[in-house]
Length: 280
Length: 280
Image (tube, rainbow over all chains, first blue to last red; front, side):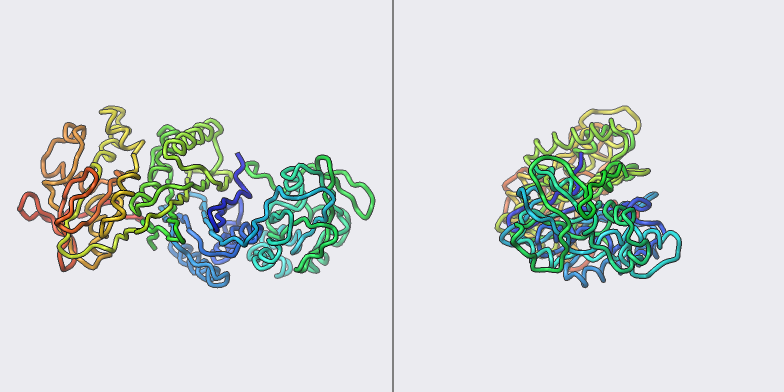
């Protein structure tokens, strides 16, 4: 069973539900305010991929450590304010062991709701946002050493809500890149019954990431398989330029599976294309 | 923070989110199919209290033991079919330790959505369903001995969806009795800025419960503070008879707090009125 990336459509609303597990999706010593932010961000990113405007969230929360709970709720309130997305309700329980945080986010869809499965052959694949920052930020969090910009990308990812709303009405297919560009591109291609080509020379990376690990093929391949970035991957006819800042990273083709190139040269696929749920 | 009993209203929809925690809300050796049923039932009971018709659910699920997961999902499928309420999406994670199961249920509201806070002074308080069975069923589950009807009330509670839909359009206030009749009546009274009187001689109990523990005041008081029953408590003008099977258990009054009587005699309130969230 893999329910992830599923959003449900209900009349003019889009609903999504993403969980964060302590020790799996965040570190036990991550600041609770940042964990709250991330819980909001990962869910709102799912809405962004549907071109939906956030309406509100429901929280499922395991009460435990009073100070942690207070800081978390303060952080959630701040994130709700930042994203203009109120807490509508939810449930609290007495927690035990590793926390499982659950959020359901509700968004209002635009006239068109893009699917992951809507790509057509011969379309251009684009990415809005940068790739690979969050994984490097996780290393910064673990080691306690490294640039703030990367740490922030890991702890406080920003869902591309406005970009998603602008893109939602014109793209053929869209998904967020929460699990890694390669795996999410492969899923989009499979859902659309197509093949896809990703050009490693076009991966959008931040200045901070390039400074940190350089621009070797290995560094770019690592970025392309890193999760937690919440960029948007979408397909458009070749003649169309996206109305938001984005980078063209490849194209769809008839056939099956994912191919990798690096400035024209064919590159073998890595053993893992990204994060696979249920194997975490 | 207590988000429980909160449902959110969104256009014509009602949303609720209830969690079940292993070892808190169900026993580790409860059959997974029954746990799935209960997760559905507790959420649909929240919708029933709003007079809403179930539309669908989103699941947040911690994968762990393959056999348990398969049985759970089979049970969830059966419950979805039974209640005509499809699984619309959700998220799976790799679980650790005690399971936290999360469900978001979406219902379509009728023309009127009753609140817990809508009771008026001098109204009759009614209960649809029986009280106290689930707690006795928990004892049966723990001891392995006792009537199937009580065990079933604990493991497979039936949300009063149709009764809720019929009542939703006429009641002044309604809530489900998930935490105990006394505590839920006290909450309804407080939310309505009223006092309430519950008559212990009128508590609706099943034949199986009466056979199990008799009809002493202590037995009735135990039933009135027992949780997990998913009956409906509602207020109506004294002149109105509910259109579903129900028992009149008391009335509202101006003032504050809860009073108990037993066939005219005043009875002191017990130390605990029921299950309090965050203290479980």
